[in-house]
View 1 (cartoon, rainbow, N blue to C red):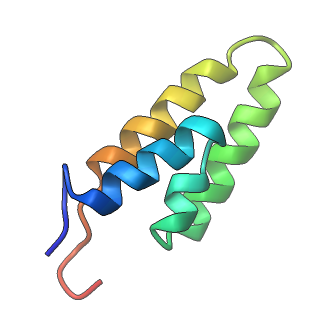
View 2 (cartoon, rainbow, N blue to C red; view 1 turned 45 degrees about the horizontal axis):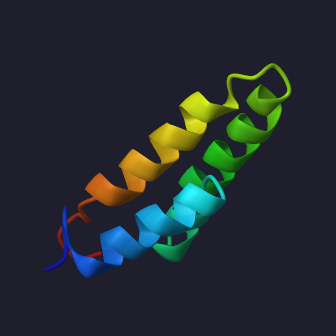
Length: 69
């Protein structure tokens, strides 16, 4: 079972470092990926996108799948 600190989560966090939401997409979390990408894109216009960008990285790194996922 993969969880926090697993290789998959590290790869997902690195993906989210480059593109917000990409790590969630790699993990198969399409809705979370879309939300984070759109929020970061919109907020970068007013220079607050870095908050969502950081959230995306941390969320991908700390993700723990539910039983059966």
